[in-house]
Picture (tube, rainbow, N blue to C red):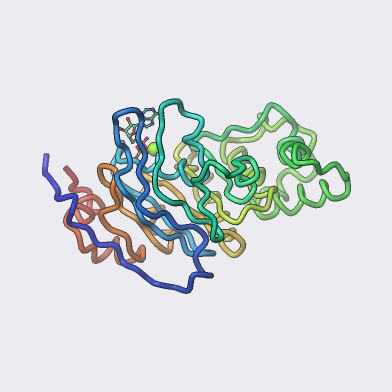
Amino acid sequence: MKEYDLNDTHITKFNPKVQDIALTTNDLHVWYGQNEAIKGVSLEFEKNKITSLIGPSGCGKSTYLRSLNRMNDEIAGTKVTGEIMYEQTNINSKQIDVYEMRKHIGMVFQRPNPFSKSIYGNITFALKQHGLHDKKQLDEIVETSLKQAALWDQVKDNLDKSAHALSGGQQQRLCIARAIALKPDVLLLDEPASALDPISTSKVEETLVNLKENYTIAIVTHNMQQAARISDYTAFFYMGKVLEYDQTAKIFTRPKIQATDDYVSGHFG
Ligand SMILES: Nc1ncnc2c1ncn2[C@@H]1O[C@H](COP(=O)(O)OP(=O)(O)O)[C@@H](O)[C@H]1O
Ligand SMILES: [Mg+2]
């Protein structure tokens, strides 16, 4: 097993205007009890871009992604320090209404997890919880969300059908539609295609590329080709740190750090 120097990092600052940044973390640390899973990560997520988080299993990608909309709050014994800046507000502060914040920063998980409800019911559930009951408005949001998730044409005549009757790839696109129905600014996805076959995977990828017109996307993926195909920026995580962050093309063709080079070329460890 090769040892890599955790202090040998290369984080490119693209320095776009502040208004071009959707989300920033400053010196973020996450502990599970005594285990420090994230050791000071500072990253910026540019608006209307896709940023991939890659790295070997156990390096903290999911932990970092979950912290971005405070999902780690639900795990007992976690401590998160550092700033997560969203629209001039540090959302990693006790005063934040987490439920409200998650309307702006939504999450899609690894396994498609539709509710045991109809397709229509999946998309309208959270909207109703947030107080929207107008049938015409709900209908409109169902239609636009499903269109944005590239699922509308396949389900428009069967909106009352159970979500569980859909294929895995369709279920995952329904989960994406459910997340975007709340009109978030930022969409976080944790290996959203890892449980899907190649055809469904490419449909989900296509969906994400279309979505970046309206959303800022952060995606964890263990699939190098996927990161290379769809993302604008890539962050390489290793042992709780980001060792390299750059434009995706640079990460995959001319990485600056040995660990990144070994990882993307399949010679890691
Ligand atoms: N819910 C949890 N409780 C305790 N430790 C966890 C939990 N989730 C992850 N970890 C630990 O945090 C570290 C990073 O894990 P994770 O974020 O899942 O990495 P990745 O997504 O890159 O595979 C690992 O050491 C893992 O064991
Ligand atoms: Mg993970």
